[in-house]
Length: 133
Length: 83
View 1 (spheres, one colour):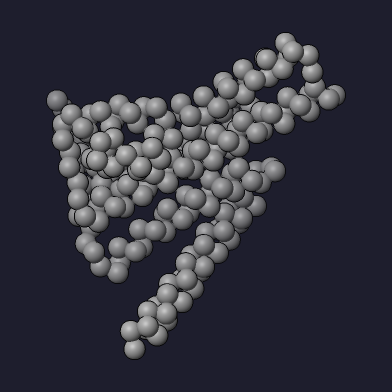
View 2 (cartoon, helix red, strand yellow; view 1 turned 90 degrees about the vertical axis):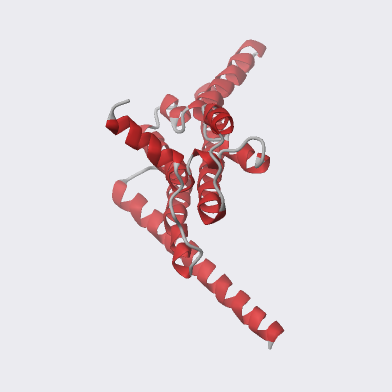
């Protein structure tokens, strides 16, 4: 692999990773893995929305629940907007709905992290296979 | 604001009422299913609907059974310590 193609390869991997973070499943869609992308998108968005439905957007708390927020932001950078809204409007939530909502939204984020890593790995494999042909 | 968007907004700005009773543990089931589906979506080499559903259901079942066994073991341990 020449230096130029190596550089292009790294940029491609970065684009795949960024897309997969922006929209769950978009990284796989870029790699023409349509079915996988659809399943990932639907499941992660459903899990995240279920968490918001149970606990309200108050579960996204960048100030009082930072460790949870780190996992939640893995869903998409758009979570930061929700976090800003929730902090500004003071949507407080306590007790069981808060726990379950935080667990759902954070697990959705960690699942998306798994998908980001998987998309980047698949992109790397596809590129090295085409380079080997 | 028309009534429909207001209702949707209200759904996501008001928490649900969930009591701290044993039934609230059932909230883990959709989460376990989501974990199994996404995990299998990243693992299976080719996605065929029937095969994929079967694999995801087996993994969901395995997680639930393992959690049940872990809960039983912890209960037994707690009983042994407190008796």
